[in-house]
Length: 81
Length: 162
Length: 92
Figure 1 (cartoon, rainbow over the protein chains, first blue to last red):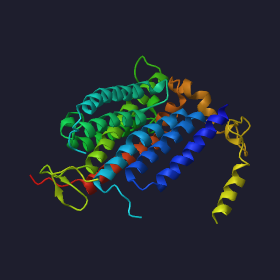
Figure 2: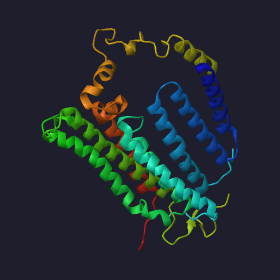
Figure 3: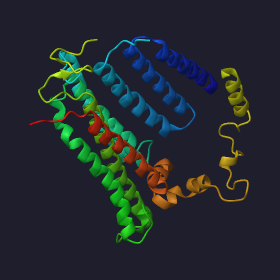
Figure 4: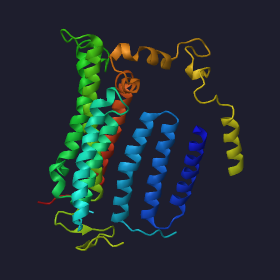
């Protein structure tokens, strides 16, 4: 049962990673990166490392997402490449 | 991002939510002895509450939480609490950060370590919270005349163009 | 090149011990040359040393507190660098 949860989480991880790299809207890319980090935190928790997962969720999804959004708002929202 | 949000729903909900997030952050710091968590996570949660207010109410209205000028000195105070705890144990003849070396009358050594860990967690939480808030403030810093400055250096009174 | 590197990583991964394996080298009380392993000491003595049930907190803030001090100083230095680079000067 546990491996099924982890399989779903790994698929979600790969999906969000590819999405964050390929999408052209930088705000959507920041959101996808935040989702990637949160999936990573869930994966840590499913492995039993609750402290690491908690740190990852708080810092990655809470703070770094805000920094990404702030940086996007200070610069431009579209990529050029 | 430093201007207040127009929607009153966002402002009211984020005010209530920010208090809940900060309360949970304080709980995480204090309860870190018994449950997952600690200074770093609790400090990041406190910073998340402040950043939520900074984004919705505007940078000026939420200065009473952690003001922009006081952020870096408070971070230094937090780091000095941590390093100072180590120096105090050094003064009592123990190793650096060996809290059990501090003689407190009537208290056993593990309990001294317990409170040493609690003090250090407070220091970490203060330092992490204020440092993260300071980084956010510097990233979205308005110029002293109150106009938003975009990357090209143009002073635009309008919200940032998307 | 990418496939070669992926194959190398997979080859290295399948020889790792299973997760939670009590016979894995990092979970034994002694390592291969006979020295005691730090993790076993932490698990056995964390509550006795600091009266704290959460041994992760004890390791982070007591046994390995100098590491955590470095971590805090890294965050503080990041804040100071952002202040020095990004903050616009107040003229009045």
